Length: 354
Image: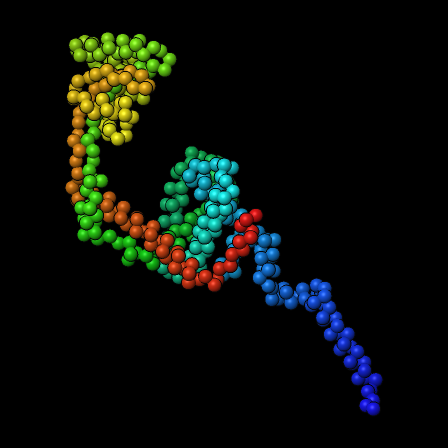
């Protein structure tokens, strides 16, 4: 019979104990070795759990995008459109979150491109100063400006300046990539002009003035009678239209300028005012009733419908077509960038539903 030495028996016992511990550590209970291995090589579930614990909803080249950033972007979008975040449904909020996340991912990818290719996106101090000045001109005071920045999570004017510089650099870099596709030639502008002439015709405009008395708080007949008396006085040359407007008109905005309403288009007026005004003769004041009250109305001049020549509209057409192409090209570039870097983007969708 093979006789085992005492040392061999001890080694076998130790190895067996070690193997039993390893089996227990990895498979029976969550021991320190298993925990360390999971930290070194985390599973997808571990990554999601860690991200959710830290409020991270995506990573771009391993840089985090936080849910707080997404929600701030949603709030900014609603603020720009004048909507109350408290009145947005849960379904719409989820949709806005995903749109905001895609924007933030696209911006992160562009930022990386800019860092690598900064020579294509250099922005001067003067450009940043001009952008900052345009922004600050929207506020009546530094206090009002700082409050607006605080509401958007921006802690200082310097942080705002850095953000503006980064945005300008990104815009310049993207423009360098799409510039060739947004250039509009004179021939293309003229072709567009020829195809859209009907829409470019400026409709007939009439220069109108009025004297107005409301009937919301007085009998309609009383208002009509007062204006009829003054209309006779105007037609007889006993008083001027401007004098009557200043004396009795209840349209506070126009009475101090002789009742002048300026040049008006029929499609931009209420029907009960537009129809009679655009059937009147020039320099022949008349009484008109609308749902608001009674008016003495006079048309003082008429500009017939006209189509401006191409050369007069050329600059506007070129700018409009270029802007349209720019928006499309930017979206296409961002989409391509996203596809090319899809393996560098991780999204933890469960956190977006929280």
